[in-house]
Structures are given as C-alpha cells and as structure tokens.
Image 1 (spheres, helix red, strand yellow):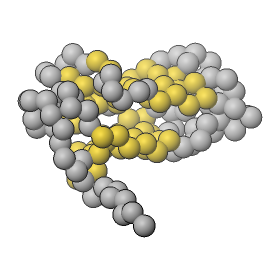
Image 2 (tube, one colour; image 1 turned 90 degrees about the vertical axis):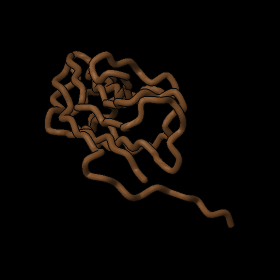
Image 3 (spheres, one colour; image 1 turned 135 degrees about the vertical axis):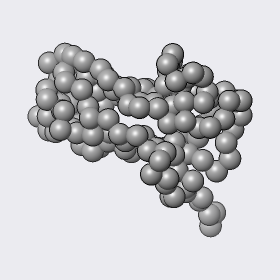
Image 4 (spheres, one colour; image 1 turned 90 degrees about the horizontal axis):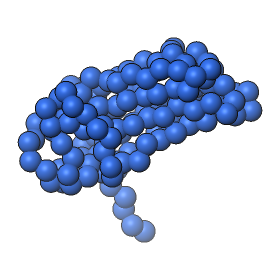
Length: 136
C-alpha cells in the first residue's frame, strides 16, 4: 500500500481569514508573504482553502473563491495554475463546505491572497469566514 504524504502542520502567521462579502459584492483577504522573490516550487508546502458550509446561499446563486498573487503586495492577479472554486446554492440549503489543497505553482509570486465574490441576490453569507493558509 502506498503512503500518502499529507501536510498537516500550520504556522498561525501564515493563515489569513476573511468574512464572506454581502450579496453582489467581493472582498479580499490580507496577503500571505511567501518571503521569496524568485519563482520556483517550494517543496513540501501546500496552500489550503477552508470555508464552512454557506446555508444562506440562495439556490442557483454562486460564490467564487479566487487565489491571487502579487510581486509587490498591491497589484494582484488570479494565479493561472489554480482554478477558481465556485460553489452554488441548491435545494434551499445553500452550498457545502469547501476544503481544497493546492501545490504552489512554479511561477507563483511573493504574496498570496484570497478574493471572494458573491452574486447579486445571493443571500446573506456574511456570518461565514473563509481561511487561506500554508500547510507544511
């Protein structure tokens, strides 16, 4: 049987949280500083996104979670190699929790943040907090 290496250790200084925005709005977390200015894979490190269930998300409305990077901590763009995650409200019970892990792409820039966008009329999900952090 193969052994799967799952990174479990977290540094509290390398976790950012953000309350979800109101319907029809978006917001971004503070940035995580990777403390490296040159591209290249950082071995044995994963980026983790955790969001509890969003029971108030209206049917057929979505919340989009995008990982963005920056070289200067002011001009951010979506990380091309990490696809946005979209959750959709359904069945009158909102959307399930999100728990995703990503390997950091080779070209990732020094600063990482999470941007969250909720469709108009998506319901009040402002009581939910998303977290983005590094796992070692």
